[in-house]
Length: 433
Image 1 (cartoon, rainbow, N blue to C red):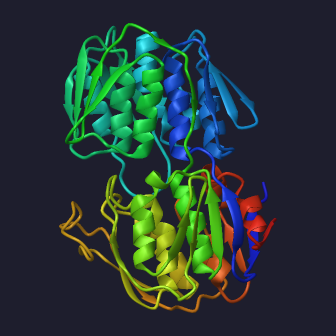
Image 2: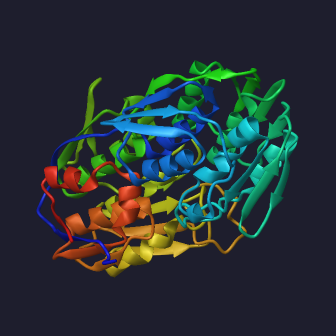
C-alpha cells in the first residue's frame, strides 16, 4: 500500500475559524462505558477520528453494536459471545485494557491484547492490573495479552502511585458495578475523567468527588443506557490557537469551553498573546510578537502534556530562550530531532529544568528542553512519530521557508477531526498525496 503523505507549502499567516468536537481522549472511553448499560447509549458531538473506528471495531467483535450518524454514536450492548478482544488489535491504542472491568462484569472473564498508543514513554499496565486484583479479579499477564477472571468484583480501597488517567478510568469502570464501596485515592482529575464520571452517573452509577484527589463510588446492581454531548477537545483547541500565533495570524476556536483552557490561556498570555473570549469562541493573536517562557507540564490542573508539542514550535518563534520541563511522560520529547532537522534550535537534557525535581530527576530520560528563538525554520521531509508530534510538524511546516513533506499522517488522523480541511480552511496550502 502506498504511504500517504502531506505536501505543505507555507502560505503566510493562518486565519479563520475552527470548530472542535469532543475529545479523542473522551469519546473512546465513553464508548467503553456504554458496554455497562442495559439499553442503548447516545454520544453526541463525537469527532470523526481513527480512534473511534478502532474502538467501534473492538466493541462490535464483543457483541455491542455501534451506529454512526453525522456526529452521533448510538451504542447498544448485546450478548458477549466471546469476551476476547482479538490480537489483531494489539498495539493500536490504549482502549483494550479499559475493557477488562466491563467484560468481567458482563462475562466473568476477559482477554485483551497488549496495549499500544503513541510511543511517548512508559505507560505501565501494572497500575491497572493491581487495581483489578484489588477488586478480587485473577489477572495473568502473558506474552500476547492479559487474561482476567472474576465471579464478582467487590469494592475496595485503591491508592494510585501516580494520578494516572488510564488507571483512574479502569478503576471507575470496574467500581460502578462492583459490590460495595470503592475509594480511589490520588485519582486523576482531568476534564475527560470528570466527563466520564458524569456519563456513568447518568447511567445510574453512584459517584462522588472528595477533596485531595479522592473519588468514592458506591456500586449498583445495574446501569442503564444514557445520552450525553461531549465538550470540545481542549488539546485540539489549544493546537489551533497556537497555529494562528506561530504564523502571526489569528484563529478563532469554537466549541471548547474556556474552563478547559485556563492554564493554557494564561501561559500564552504571559508570552504576549492577546485573547478575545466569549461564551462561544476563543481567539488569540500576538501583534507585538512573542516572549519566551518557562513551562512545566503536569497532571490537571497543570499545563497538559499534550499541549507541549505545539508549544515547542511556538517557542522557536518567541524572541529569546524558553524552557520546557516534561514531567508526565519520559519519552515525550522524541519528536525534537524532527524539529531540529527543520532548523529549530533545541537542546534536550536529562535534568529537571524550569521547575522542581520530578519523578524522572534521577533517570537518564531526556525530559527537559531549552529552545532558542526566533529560529528560521526550513522545509523538510519529516516522519510524524505520534499524534501530537504530528500536529507540531504541521505547525513547523506552516512557518518554515520552503515546502515540506510529512509522513506518518495516519497518526494525526487518528486523533484530530478532519485536519486537512481545517488547515486548508485557515489558508494553509496542504495537499494530501
